[in-house]
Length: 415
Ligand SMILES: *Cc1c(COP(=O)(O)O)cnc(C)c1O
Ligand SMILES: [Zn+2]
Figure (cartoon, helix red, strand yellow):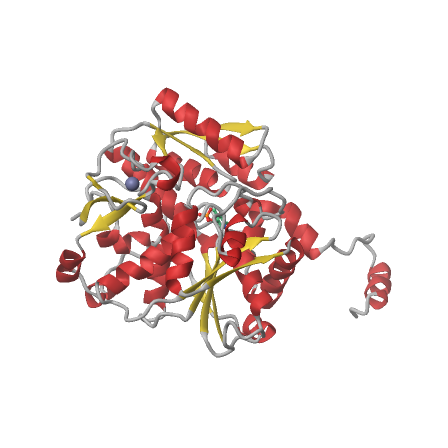
């Protein structure tokens, strides 16, 4: 059963019937007029419970399908999306001085990032609407996840990426058989060209901010965190921010659970960007409207100079009573190293930026050392090996001789 009532504009509040092609509020325009999916929470509450959920054997994001805008009869990708592990690595907690620090490892999704949660919704909705071709522009992970999920559903994909997208992600696109258009320009250029092409050919639109259903997929990460913590809501969720859809999705997930009474508090959100591209952090900290920014960061997934979902993201952080910080690319590389060495988890630069923000705040009193914190690692480090090597350094290169090895290890103090 689908509990969706319709769509509501986050700016003017006008409600719309869900229909193919209805993505944004015509009154407020495609940037301000983002639509939000509205559900019949009373009905969800009547028909579902935490106990019923505990009996579910669906260990994927679809265990929360009561909260998703999908027809239960539509086929789904056969991939296992979601139900990623929530770890509590002791070494990492010690290194940061937070006693109750968890990592939600979204790198374990089928195409190795949190974006699979949104792309799954996109391909299912596309099939529901009778589309056979789906398109998006992306800094990389939305693209690779769309390509993978489209392949799983037998859809054709057109993907627009900025020229700087890391090779690992481009390789994923090509392997999944997408038509890959590498736009020699910024993410903004790729986004605008994709919008024109979608209009021109009438493809199904997976652009995250524009398509109101995708955030609904992203919110399942919050639902999992709550369930995995036995419905004890953490004090803080730390997550990286690009367009702003992910953090808005996290907020919606907790709010939905609160609405149906499955949790009794909401977490504070820590939104983190790279100081090389921090339009939303700057807006938040200086309490002014956001302005377009340069895209100068190694964290390609959040190198978004013109965010597509700024209002929902800023609203989420403010409503939660949380905060935002910007960290340097050095801090991000440090966080990659620290996470890898203390926990065996490999995050891409944007994947660990939330953690880098936590580390930045450690000890300054904003977050208490005893508070419960979940850092979402949003993407896997194998997608961007070049930056991983930049973070971690080169291997010890020697001739195949034990004598050499003895000498080398001694010299490095490793014997
Ligand atoms: C897309 C992405 C983000 C940020 O999500 P937004 O919705 O753009 O804010 C963070 N980390 C990774 C790995 C991503 O792919
Ligand atoms: Zn509106």
